[in-house]
Image (cartoon, rainbow over the protein chains, first blue to last red):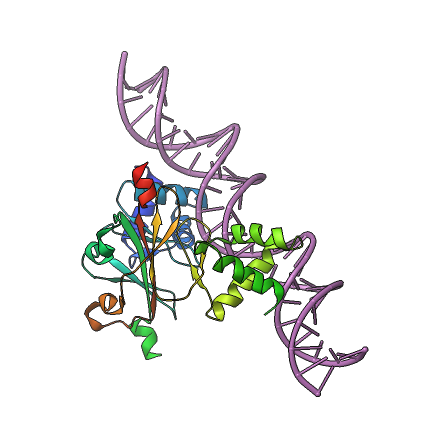
Length: 120
Length: 120
DNA sequence: TACTTATTTTAGAACAATTCTAAAAGGAGG
DNA sequence: CCTCCTTTTAGAATTGTTCTAAAATAAGTA
């Protein structure tokens, strides 16, 4: 765990929970001016591989990184682009169609309008 | 509906169901040597906008295009990369967490091992 | 502490998938 | 068979991400 890796983890942990590489880079560079985007990617991969954070892939944009690997699902606000946590319980049984295919994991993003955007 | 647009739709319709732009381009070029990748993309967008086909986004690779827009879900074989159809019924109710967020739509890909790959 | 070795960081190029641009070609309606 | 609007083309541009090789840093060992 290098200083920079720790800093990137800290940035995520201190955030609202979901950040994209460019924003992490922006914040990390404020602390470490020599920081480079490749280092952000390297460390996000390393942290995800170590099970400390989670990578979330969404259609048509950069990936998000989740401050926690705890199982939960996500909703993407179609108005502001923010990623929200939702709790749906374990969906394995739901995704096991007629018991014929093994469910290793899944990528799920629900499209919604967040409370803030609903008011505007 | 131009000749080329019709050809791209036909290629999809005559396929196993799920193709990626580069493969559609390869097949379309066999029929129309002047075909260009941008035309494939243009027409896939046009056909998807018209509700004739469906665009399916998967993590870490090119999008798939589904020959039918009928609602159903997909499983991706982690071994061979093939996309399979699965029927899970309407998941709207499942994805409505505690009734607080509107569910507009969703992107779902289940990771599995297809029957063929299970045997090998 | 000093040395060795493995890992990380950097800078920049490379890459893949997709989109954009402007000009040429094609198709539909009158 | 004109006119106008849409599509196609060729190629450059863009975005997000990964790769490469060299320099820097960290960790383990003596």
